[in-house]
Length: 172
Ligand SMILES: [Zn+2]
Image (cartoon, rainbow, N blue to C red):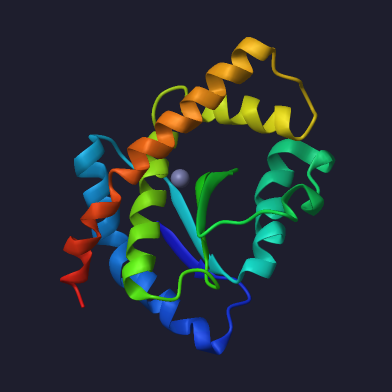
């Protein structure tokens, strides 16, 4: 796992410190509870204003010039998990994740998605989804509906990891 900061302000340094402290234990908790591996993960802590650029840089090598930061301009999240050329990319919003307890919840949740994305067939489905979102190749309705149901199921499963934050609280 590779953890880095992107355009982080000095006052946000403590968020990166917390993420570095808990990332290993949080990844192991997610793997144990879901029975899978997180695979190759790059984790970036960044202010909200930089998230569209980080996503654009991750997706352009995969999807080409159609990828435009305007796709992500309205993007609001505490954290998000997507793919990059090397594997899975987790982005933590340093503006939204200020409190320690909240950082822990978000990191656990996103590692849940990393385990999901490392499952057989998941990356191929994500690529089809993103190609659809970028207007490269439209998904047939039936496949789109199935993909939406998968997203809902994935969210519910990731949310079930969040209560494990109390185990991470013991690390402080
Ligand atoms: Zn989620």
